[in-house]
Length: 119
Length: 106
Image 1 (cartoon, rainbow over the protein chains, first blue to last red):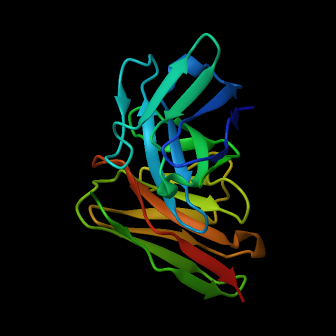
Image 2: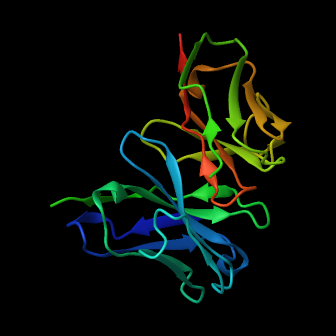
């Protein structure tokens, strides 16, 4: 059974940093691209970052480019999201997702972790 | 960015057929996907590549479309289908989601 378990969320002040982790199990982690997608309270979904299966390439929308960094440790089956210079608009539930190769859709989602950016 | 437009809400009776639309601001070929999100839960994949049913998803769900106009159909609707449905495109960077259609049962 595929499982994605996110940790690391919490309350953080604007301008500070936070690092999320996602531990994967039930599949061969290093065969899959992985991504983060977020959802602000009561709002829709927004893709945040993706990483290739080797970790050699990463992709971001303009809204987080230069502030967020996605990475992975294939030996530990773990995905990360380093979030710097956090803003109030980054407040959201962050989901770790597994990507289907070649078509960039998300076939498995974690339960999500809440990040609140507030002073 | 490619904007995906969905109707905000729909209300149907159990046993009826419902179609949920998603219109893209530019062509996305057939790289359109649909997700279901029940209250308090993470989204789950229903349909990928416009018309392919994800494993384990009931055959009551189907998808169609190409280019800029896409449809998710549920026939017949059941009480358990109360949820918000999102479309997502992966043809144009950045990948984007629609605003979601909240389906309510009468």
